[in-house]
Length: 296
Image (cartoon, rainbow, N blue to C red; front, side, top):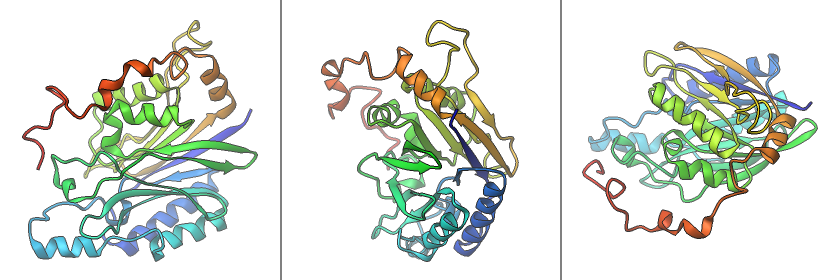
């Protein structure tokens, strides 16, 4: 049995970029001491998801200036830590991108190499996040962990509310999807998240911010919904879930069991009829899927 242990770093918002790096690195060190293979930070950790009150030109200019790139000291710090700790780190940040910084996560392997950089595709156009530039594609990458190589993808917060995000990552081969998050996780969003794992036969790991800013509930969900394919007992798929406060939550996934389930369960890609799905990519949508007054 080959296992993978994830650490969800449910940390209170940092007050500065320097604090984000310092506290993020401290969390990663504790995670590796507790046996984690991957550490996942909440959404846009570099500035604590600060995309508010940008109507003032000076405030917006300072916000744009706070963005960092994959070649920044911030990411270099996490790369060095990954090499030192021999663990993978999913570092999140406001990524420099001209006048429209992007909401981004970079997955760093245990050798300190960036194997995946993903910018949020579904930016929340109905919130202040409309100031962010949107990513243009999803990615799946090989992540070597000890004696195995895992196919890992990413989506960020609002992405998970679109079933197309999880399905696309699944058909691209993702076995695990990392989901940095920054929103209230109520029962509907939790149920939705569990459904993404179930319908795509993909494990999901999500880290959120704690109260009082948000409500925590970071979680890891397994795709294994039945004890034996579609014939056995229905199982609880939440492997671990954090409380509301600041904490680190660890969860261990049986990768061999997930791979066996992916081969044998009836959901996912095997019985798709993509030749019938053309309307999904038709930009001429009908209500309630057409653009509306919520868009800035």
